[in-house]
Amino acid sequence: QKEVEQNSGPLSVPEGAIASLNCTYSDRGSQSFFWYRQYSGKSPELIMSIYSNGDKEDGRFTAQLNKASQYVSLLIRDSQPSDSATYLCAVNTYNSGGSNYKLTFGKGTLLTVNP
Amino acid sequence: DTGVSQDPRHKITKRGQNVTFRCDPISEHNRLYWYRQTLGQGPEFLTYFQNEAQLEKSRLLSDRFSAERPKGSFSTLEIQRTEQGDSAMYLCASSPITGITEAFFGQGTRLTVV
Image (tube, each protein chain N blue to C red):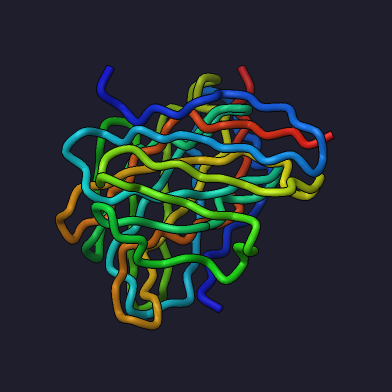
């Protein structure tokens, strides 16, 4: 069973702080990694993608990937109340036929940013 | 707006009835996915299409579920003889044909079986 694990939280941070969200995955063959943001009652929204080891920055968001440790993280700097949402980690996984077009999601981490 | 579109947004049905949902992907995207999400869980893969071909179907999907994408454009997901356990958000996503699986979701269809 190929799994993606996230701490379900809730993770509570004060406004202006750095929020750190973590994810581990079991499929060593995975090559693409994504973070989605999901507001309550809404559908997931893609916010970051990362494919190579290291850091990738986009505005207040930084994604970090360590394939050796099978670990992906998302840092949100200067957290705002509007960042309060569930953050889903998604990883492409291979099926038995060898294609990797499917995304496997973690259960998500609920982030609350307190004003 | 050229994003992924799903219809209906909400559906309430009685147990035992059949329901059908529609998904219109982003026009240049060849891959289309169906996921199901229940409260407190991440999206769970159901099936995916590349053009009109259904290339993978989750073993979790019972025979009551069927999906089609007849002309490689829109897709339908049908659930026959609905059960209360089918109550969930049904999400459709699409992605381009390139190897990178950056997928974009529609608004979802929330199904309630009473």
